[in-house]
Image 1 (cartoon, rainbow, N blue to C red):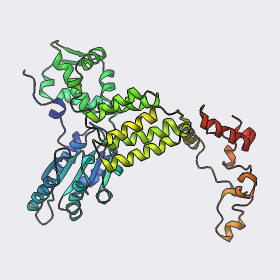
Image 2 (cartoon, one colour; image 1 turned 90 degrees about the horizontal axis):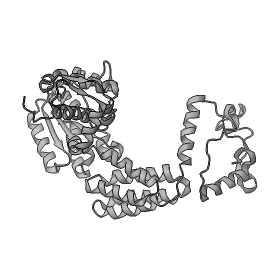
Image 3 (cartoon, helix red, strand yellow; image 1 turned 60 degrees about the horizontal axis):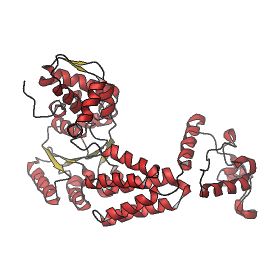
Length: 427
């Protein structure tokens, strides 16, 4: 049998909702999106999730099950003119408003403001039902006017059982796969390398099968790992290195290596990565990995994001480079990051503890009669604007969550805390 020209992931793309694997919180029995589809009253929506979790497939299934015309645009290749042409065709196909077409926009986060503005009227009037797909947080990438007219649904990475089910389904339903005697002896490598991405999983599976002339084809972890590493271009032909490279980038900054950080920055900008995505990750790194060891890092990163937004590519590359070098060479501390993680864990363990009476607000006479706010000491009434009192709930009083990092700034903070609190903050 000749090698199919269409990738396995495309050949086994589900055509009906009952064939769709994963996202049961959205399309399972009684779930919100399934109900909307069944009722035929689907609003314009944005599907937000990582690559390969079924955003495009779900959009196509929705259109088919609602029996509506389906238009698709790629944010990379389409302009305002293309949007208007599709809207005009959609208007010509409407019949008393009962058959409004579905317009699917892949990577809607790459649409400019003017492109998104051109959708507003058609979405608001119901000329089209918009389905946008994005791997980026729509709060940052979709203009508020359009986002307010859409329902956002979050798609999750596929779990182990979803991925195993996908492989079983592909081996049984695809003619090329069914024609081979395939034994899934080991699946750990396929699952690990997929990262929850169905497209990656199926294309990797197909790559291993096509590479083997054995009968049966025995899938093992070693075979998968060796073959995928030997053929990175075939394996990653749709650009899923995105997450690996941003991880290497952030870890280089965290590890105080400006050379490596600049290399990964260049890999991203040369590959067409959205500079605002990079700038947002720098904002996170400035707080998570540098924190109060150098508070100016957060100011730098925020200014970088603003400048990138205003200037755009390619000029913003200079600003990204400057900020990356500054963050990589800054002293590091994850003390604040660890502190909030510890605090959240404490909340999970202790539940909703009552606010101590002396810390409660007392805007009414009844509340004052109930001793809300009684015995609270106003810090500014005391020397140095400080007085010792307990601010934690009674059940966990004295609990320490913040441990200053071993750097000059935070050690100054530690000395100040110890001077105020003595033993309570005696680091």
